[in-house]
Every structure is written in C-alpha cells, then in structure tokens.
Length: 445
Image 1 (spheres, one colour):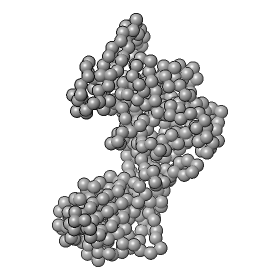
Image 2: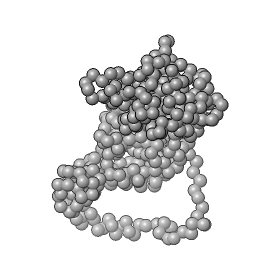
Image 3: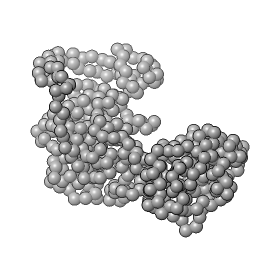
C-alpha cells in the first residue's frame, strides 16, 4: 500500500525540507518552498530491487571492456548535425532551451518532417494537434510516419512509446508533463526531475534519440532543477533577437562531441533556413562610407565569422554619460573606454557611448575588442573606415594589442570575402601588425 509523504521543495534549486521555510537554506531564495505530496510504495521498491540485471550489477575490468560502436543517425539538418557532432546518437537525450518564440518548436517540427523515412512521435504539451498541423503545412510535406501525442501523464506516455517503438521521440516541453507518483502540479522541480528520469530510461530502453524542450528563466538558464542538465547527454541553447532573422544554436554540453561548434539559421516565413555562410548576411555593404562602423573577424566555436560593429559617441546631454551595449559585454565596454581615454587620449568621460553588434548576435570572443575600439574612434573623430578593412585583436589594460587564436583562419575568411587589410597583432605578412592602441588611432587618422 502506498504511503503519503509531504515535503517542501525549493523551486529555485530543488532543496527539500520536512517543514516550510521562508528562505531556502541552500540558495537563499525567499518564498520558494512549495509543498509537494509524494507517494512511495514498498512493493514498488522491492520489485525494483529484484529486477536488476545481473550483468549490470557485477564488476567489470576496464581493460577488458569492449567499447560499443554506434553509427550516428543524420538529422538531415546540416547545422543541427554540426552542433551535435555529426548526427544523433542512438539512445542519446538532447535538451534544447531558449526564449519563448525563438523557434525551438519550429526546428524540431522541421526535424520531424525532414525524416519522413523514420517513425517519429511528437509529444505536444503546449499546442493542440490542429495548431501543429497548421504549422506543419507551412513547413513542408507531412509523411505517414509522423505521429502526434497529447498524452501528458508520463507513465501512460511511456506505455505508448513502448508499444509504438518509434525511431525518434520529441517532447515539447518537459515542463508540461506530469507523473502519477507525485501530486504536485506540472512544471515544479520534483515533476520535471521525475518525468525526465522516466523518459530518459525509456529512450535508453528503446535505444532511440530523445529531444526535450525546456523553458528558461529570466536569467536565461533552463528552468527546473540543475540536475536536469546533468541527466541529459547534450544541452543546446537556441539564441537570437525576436526582431532579427538570425538564430544561433550553441552547445553548452555534449557527451558525444565538441562544444565548440555553433549552428546558424535564418528565420523565414516557411520556417528555419540553414545559413552555411553567415558572414555575408552579418556584414552589410553600404553605397557610401559611414562613420562609427567597423568589421570584426571573430570565432564562434571553430567557425570564423565577419560581424559588423557599430558605435555612436555623442556629447552627454544629461550630465551623467550613458553606456549602452547591445550584444557586447557592458563591463568590457567600460574597460575599453577607460583604456581609450587613458592610453589613447580620447576624452570619453563626458560623452555618451552606444555600441551595437549588427544582426542581434551576442559575441563573447575577445577578438572583437579591436573592431569595437576602431568603431568608437571612428565615431569620436568622425572618420570613415575603409569598407575593405577589418579588425581582429584583444585589447589589454595597458593599451596593448594582444594576439588571438586561429588567426590564419580569420585572415583566410577575410580574404575570401574580399577584404584587403586586416588590423591585428599577428606577425603574418597578410595582416597589418599593431602593438598598441595609439598606433590604431594614428592609422585611422
């Protein structure tokens, strides 16, 4: 007979307590402890203990273990395969997070439609079957192997999956599922942990790939317990501005491949289009030269990209100068402005400075520093930068230009797109060698 047990679980970190607390003792969050009724059955525990496989419980000598050789399953979406490390692994679990409306469901629905030769079960927890059918009609042709499930009880869903034996499982989203073992509402930490655990076990049992869609919090982290990211094999982050067309698919964890790759998509009316050469989209060529713009050669993963950096420097109207950065680290912008004022003699303490990276991208590569400084200098001195010039280099606190990794790839990408001059710290003859920020000001003058 089942026993009922009540616990209070923190919705921020997953810590549990037998009594209610106003402040979580683990993460310090206030009013985050919610009551959760849990049912446990001694019979179920005995059954689980008896059903262990003897082959799994015995010890194995590591030297004699034969590795499994699995062939990857192509997703037929090149940018997704690039991020996954060459394709989907049988039995792997992939968690995709991103802001609402960014295109997570569209990407996975396109994955479903393009693999018409495989039996795929799409678990719809947020939309009705009619809504998914309407979107699928816009994305492409629907095959007979695509099945939609609206079952939100994970135990019943697993029975369906065990009976149908699909080749791919997609759950949109994990926050909408619920387990009979818990009486808490869907979306709580305990429900997410329990439903994910059961689905992962079913994916391993069927030896098929499983895709889970996860909501994110205000801070940009995937909602739910942090243990969810540890349970899955791959964690993908879908990024982009709602007003822009470009979408980036990043890997933050990958047990079967590298985390240095990114996938680039363009949102169109008929779905997501793969962008094999994003540099041509990110860099705009204007009929006339403009001040305050520069082109940077950055690396996103191991792929070199050309991005346009924009800056506007104007007199401060309201006493306190404004510092606004879009797509660039605001703290690094303040550091860069201090270096330009101290080392290059630019009086920026009384100026408003606004910087932006075109395309709605967020660039973490420090090689963008040199292009950012060039755009600020161009706007401050009202100088035009040649459209055949690009920049790649990190700026230190002493004003020195520091070299960056994979410079040969960056220069090759710039040459391929027709750029004649590359400002960098590289000693390569094809680049313009700089050692100090003052040299950049002189050359731009």
